[in-house]
Every structure is written in C-alpha cells, then in structure tokens.
Length: 398
Image (tube, rainbow, N blue to C red; front, side, top):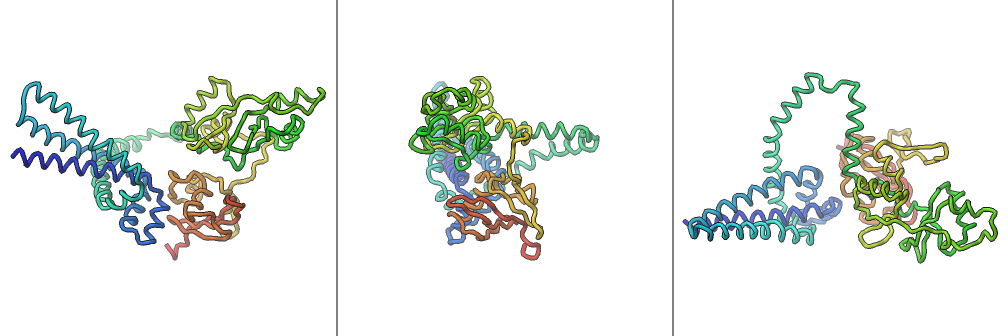
C-alpha cells in the first residue's frame, strides 16, 4: 500500500514537473517561429502555434492544473510519510518534502523550460493542449458565479452613459500600469543624436533643424551615449565668443533605464530625480531608444500635440478599403482598425509583426496573411520596414 502511494506521488510530481517545463518553454516560443516550424513539418509545432494564438489563456490554465498536480503529489507523499514516521520526525519529513516538491516540481523544471524554448514545448505539445483545455474549463466553472453577478449589475444599469468616460480613463490607467518602457519609447532608428566631435554651434543648428530641446551625445557610435546636450545650455552661448566649444564642455550626464522597466516606476523616478529624458538600453547594453516624460504621459492620457508638432499620420485610408499604415503603429491599434486579434505580446509594432512573420527583412511588395489580416510590405528602407499596406482577408478566402 505504501509502495502504491509512493508511486502515485511520484507520478503526480513527474506530471507537474513536465507541465511546468513545457509551459516555460511554450511562453518563450514566438508564434511566428512555431508557424514556420509547423510549415516545415516539425512535430508538435502545429499544436504550439494554436496555443500561442491565444496567449492570455495559457498561464492561468497551466497554473491551475500544475497547482492541482503538486497538491495531489503533496497529499500522497504526506500519506506515505504518515505511515513511516510520527511525531517531530513526521513534521521534519513533511517540511523537507515540501521544499523538495517546490524545487523538483517548480523551480528546476521552469529553469529548464526557459533555457529550451521550442524543443520541450514541441515534445510535450499534447500534454500542454490537454492541460490548457482542462484548466480553461475549470476556470470557467469558477467564473460562472462572477459572470452572473456582472450580468445582474448590467441589467440594473450600473454603468450609465455619463460613466463611460470614467471607465475609459480607468482602463487607460490599468493599461498604463502594465506597460513597459519598450512600448512607449522612441526607437533608436528615429533618435536625433549629435556626435561628441561636433561643436556647440553645430549642435545648435541640429537642434533648431529638428525642433527638439534635448539631444543625446554619442561617442564611438549610437551604442555609446556619453551625455545629453540641452538647447537651453546652447542658447546661452549664442553671441558669446568663441561659439565653437566642444560639446563635452556643456553636456550633462545621461540617465539610463532598461527597456523592460514598467512605465509607472520610471515616471515616479523621473519626477523625483527631475529628469525629463532617459536613454533606453537593451539586455546587451546597447541603445534601444529614448523616452521622455511626455511619452509616458501620452500613454496615460493620449497623444499630446502642440503647434510645432508635424507628426505624419500613422493611418491613411485607401480607395480599395485597405489602409496604408506607418510601421510604428502599435499592433493593438491595428487590431482596433481591422477588427482582428493579431498578437501584441511578441511584437509591439506593425513593422515588428511583419519582420516576425517574414523571419528576415521582407522584400518590397511581399505579402503575408495572418489571423484574418493581409499585410504587404509597402516600403522597406535598409533593414527597417517603414510602411505597410493592411486589410482584412477577403470573405471568400476565409
């Protein structure tokens, strides 16, 4: 009997560990890569691509099933320990068993899955599919009562028309709390920079040309930001000879932040430090872009435009019902435009989506169909997609 209980405990633990490793591998797998592998006949890639098509349901479903398996393993193990020891020895054994279950069923499998994206997810694709389906059904049972309460509230007119604006603002605040710096920054390719080798008069000419108030100063290249130069400091030198001093004399220290930093934290830091602009760096220490307080506030309240802004339109309707969009357009804005559900977890912008689907720099005129949308690379400049023609898949082809 004890042997059977031990075998049951080991089986539950093994399933929990396999599910945790597969789940960690799954969320680290880009859907575009899974689609490409599925086209190449990779076993399990089709199931993985299907699961990644609805990312929000993956983690809650897997976590629910994984927790249930660990609890079952713990109960079976407790039964075995209770039959073998008692007293303080039992308490110590249960404590050690709990630690072992966490390490073997959670920490080690998760670490393994993160180091092996694609591979483990493909091998355990069927287990993932069953677990996600079962977890989703269990979660639906839990939510049934909450849904009924919400329906009653809606029938009673809890949300009047005059409340819609408050609801929209609350939604913006919630989205703001989840956003990271990479989603709101000015990308490196759009940055205006000035070389440290230039003089103050050259820097002033560049600032006047682009209409900016602060410019990063670069040393050996775009990844070597050595400071920031302020228009206010440059203007003080106008008419004061000599007007050709090196920028290093007036540049100020740059403020660096990682691209994964939550915007709510950065906003508080910039307010307390009285910093208006920050240089964004990627995981390798290279320059990813820059962000200002205005960029952070626009994420919360919407676009802030003044009389000097000449930002081109991001969306231009075409006569055939399609749209010509700037590649910087966020993917969720494209979803609102087309009524689609293109994933925005892996790609922040339409340009990133096209690059992900192509797996390389696309050719001009190259066409992609994905989740009910048609995307055509309209303009490609070097390694960068600049404009994309988008539209819905014709009804006859869906």
